[in-house]
Amino acid sequence: MRLPKQGKSWPQIEAEMTSRGANDAKWRDGKTAVYVFNAGEEIAEVQKKAYAAFMSENGLGPLAFPSIAQMEKDVISMALGLLHGPEGATGAITSGGTDSITMAMKTARDYARSRGHSGPANIVLPQSAHLAFDKAAHLMDIEVRRIALKSDDSYQADPDAMREACDSKTIMMVGSAPNFPHGIIDPIDALGEVAQSKQVWLHVDACVGGYFAPFARMNGVPVPAFDFDVPAVCSMSADLHKYGYAAKGASTVLFRSEDLYAHMPFDLDGWSGAPMKTPTLAGTRPGGAISAAWAVMNYLGEEGYKRLQGQVCATREKIQEGVKALGFDVLGNPMLGLMAFRHPDLHSFAVYGEIYRRGWFTSVTKEPPSLHLMLSPRHADVADAYLEDLAAACDAVRNGQAAKKKQVEARYS
Image: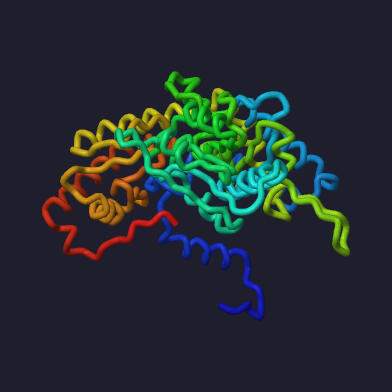
């Protein structure tokens, strides 16, 4: 496509955009269980209006836009209140989970350097930890040591094995709350004991659960300790645009103290322009993402989040029972909105292909081969339809009908 010589009218452009989106995943219908967190039109309207109100403002300039700076401070304060941040804890809004994880790793690296660490560095994390850690490690030339999960079918990190993998060059250990592949919360308490004994920075990746687990706990779910309540936790990542129901892209990276946070910002005056300090990887920071997060959190409040996360947990429990009735085994003990399940007699990727052909855009887990769902409040309305189509998909695979069709590649990308 080349830039048109003459501009088009908005109705023409709008019509073409609508046409282009015709074959996208039908997330508004509740048929997508990855990428989108659908809390309904009411929340979507708050997102849009709040984003548009500060769409042109730039979080890079707190002196020019003190409103955005204050909203970011408010969001971080609310986040730390939910996640048991101690006095002096702080953080920043980033563009997403990968950004938050990257900045946490950069901060841990620079902190280690300030304490005399030099030469090669490594991080120790469970096999189920998000690949964003590998991406950040690639950027910073840090070795990644992925450690096998416990052998007890809990799909949790193995603290003892991770202890053995730590050495004098380890700058960070990682636990997930929950991990993405299986939806399982790692034993953060036990990882904290290892981190303290090894004097290693512990990061908790709560990108999925940071704005879900506190409200699930308020609703009576027995969520184990996973946040700054664990004394060894130095930093956390938690995504606002997931179960915080904020507009994309918005996440938070949080630190136990100002002393730790001080190693995150980039501050330089050795060039021809004015001195510049940026707290995160980005320079320009969309004001709309910050204002939308602030607005949604204030709009929902504690009771609103409890209601939405309660719906998600109830839907997950319903689907758990439904897939078990179809002969599937649910992996581990999922407590939040993520779950993975597999059938002992049917290949999960073949079933995925069949459910995809029936209009469902979900995901898969590779180890072990499983179907994967990341549920939203909207899925409460379509759980029965999903289970019906899943049963039909299983029948198609069982009867050999799926083998006659073009295979669908299952990817999280």
